[in-house]
Length: 264
Image (cartoon, rainbow, N blue to C red; front, top):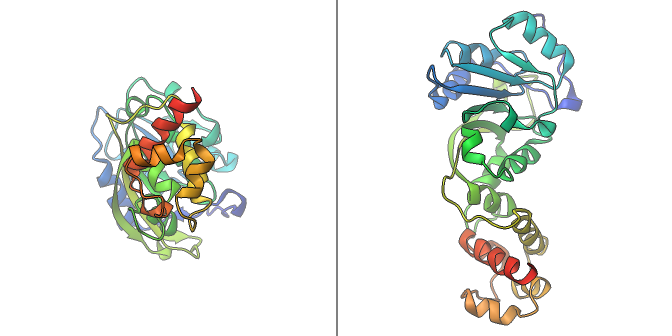
């Protein structure tokens, strides 16, 4: 494949480090019965390694028309190439079997992609696991825990539906062109059991209200969401003088449950 000039508009940074490619592929633990989905294959460096594991089927989603064409030339019939925007794809229609997802996600839309997957009703039936590359700062927000400076909406939403483990940090030198930021690989597995809200966007709404005022005491966002805020705080054993980052994830789930009782 000829050298292709990456497009800044699509957030393209091609992974070239063979050691990192091996780490990512091994984390997938692929066998011959697995269906694989790769998001943003770029020049196909990771794709090539995945194919050596001989999965049952491999889909790749590549928005760039030129890259999609080059991938077709390089791999011919070895994979199914979808020249579409990942944000517009209905992954449930691709396979009847849970897929292993690999993604060197475009950093400019990585959180949008993650939120899209979090919202899926049948997440654990659509996906077996994800091995995803994020900008390090974003990855740290995803895995942040209570009382940490970067703990917020993203950590709460992700932890509600997913078990997440950090695999490795990745140097900018592992990419072409070299980005200005470090990256992190996360292993993400859909939870089988989780609290099923009437509308998942209610948890997004609640965390948005709280963390838009993260320096304020909890008393203020509680008052915005509930007419009986004092009663709710006592019922859930919430200290109204705490701040949003002090509340554990379970409390936000309980708050969302109470919120849905009040609006439905």
